[in-house]
Structures are given as C-alpha cells and as structure tokens.
Length: 281
Image 1 (cartoon, rainbow, N blue to C red):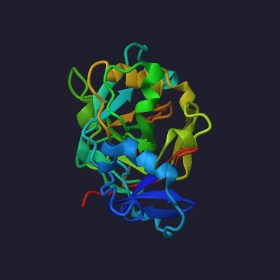
Image 2 (image 1 turned 90 degrees about the horizontal axis):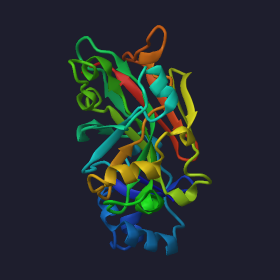
Image 3 (image 1 turned 90 degrees about the vertical axis):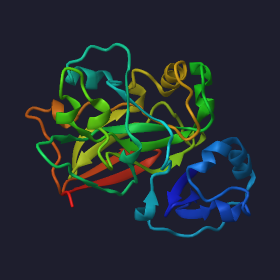
C-alpha cells in the first residue's frame, strides 16, 4: 500500500489514483496525514478489507511530505562503508543526530539556498516511518513497528556542519527544506525485499550516487533496536538511515549545489522525488 499527503489530506494511492481516506472510511479516520500513525493498526485492518476502487487522478506536484509533523526525527551518519571510507572515518558506533522539524518538506519542493559563504551538499537516504511505538525492541521484532518506507534527502550545509571542534550535524542539516521526503510511504509488504532496495540520486541529470540498501552497515532492524534501546520511537517518527558514497564533499575536486540545481532522488520500489535549489527570496 502507498499512502500520501495530497494537499494536506491523507490519501491512499492506487493505480495512479488518490483515495481520500476520510471520505472512504465515512469519517472513521480523519484527513490529517500525521494523525493516522496513532491509529496505525486500526487503519491497516480497515484498509486491508476496504473497497478501494474509485479515487481521482491527481497532480504529483501537489503531494506534500507523507509524514509532515513527526515528533522525533532521527538521522544516522556514516552507515554505508563506502561513504565512511570516502569521509576518512573509521566505522564504529552509528553517528546519531537529528534534523529539526522545519527542515521537512515535500517531494517536489523548492529549497532556498542559505545566505553567506556556504557549501550545500546532497545525500539521498532511505527513510523509515514508525507505525507502532517501539521501546527496547529486538532486531527480530523491529519491522513490526515500521509503518513503511519513503525516499529522503539529507541536504547538508558543510561549513556549519563542520564548524568548531565538535561538528554541528543537526544545525548544518536543518535549514528550511533540507529534509525533502516522499513521494509517499510504501508499506513493507509491498516490497519484494525490504532490505535490498536500489538507491541513488542525480544532480542536473548527472548521476552522483548509486547503491543498494543491502549495503547499510546497520540495517533498518538494527537501527530500530539500537535507537529504541535508549529512547522510545513514537508513531510517525522518521529515521533517515544514512547515505551511500558519492556526496559532493568527498569528490575530487569537491562539488556543491548552487541555485538552479535540480536533485532527482530515487529508491526502486518506492519512488522518486525532485528537489529544486532556488536563490534566497
């Protein structure tokens, strides 16, 4: 099943049609895309047996972030061996930081370029959406707490990220719009192999990153286990799982984004998002 945020309303996407859940359920579920995660099990039971025929054609550019108001956003650094190697960092414990809520935007967003002397980079990522509260869960039980998966970009401003003696990961990755997600959330049962999904991105049509999520050093299950051992994961929370090799900072010479650049990001089996970098207004 694919679920999405269409102009602020919660919909199921089926055969390129959008089915408004509030209307289809006769008000049993509301229109708020974020609220559905608090009733995830009930919603899945209803959706699995509902008549989902009908619906309406829609413009994909009207899609918003599928989980627009998560209470917690986790992000994992250096979770692909090749990205750790290109960054010159030895693999150890996962690097965990947060992206702040105002960084979250939709799958076809225009993102303003920050003012000042900045270096803005791309990082395509698999994003996990939590569907059931998870606290101290095991890796073997982790997927039962996952609502689904979506495509994300962990856009990063490297100057602020690396300033000072201790990096400022959260600030450098949380400018407005620096967390595009979408185009929808795909439930794990829709995927032939939820742990092996081709992932990549291009800038202005030139491929920059290509990998597969089976190369994650800490899989979705391991990340849910590790994070939930410390802090409860709440329905609707997001986990950005890390980016593969090919970021601009690690290239020779380094490459960075400029206003006018277009980032196309994909995960096979989930979908594609397009992010346009624009000059500050």
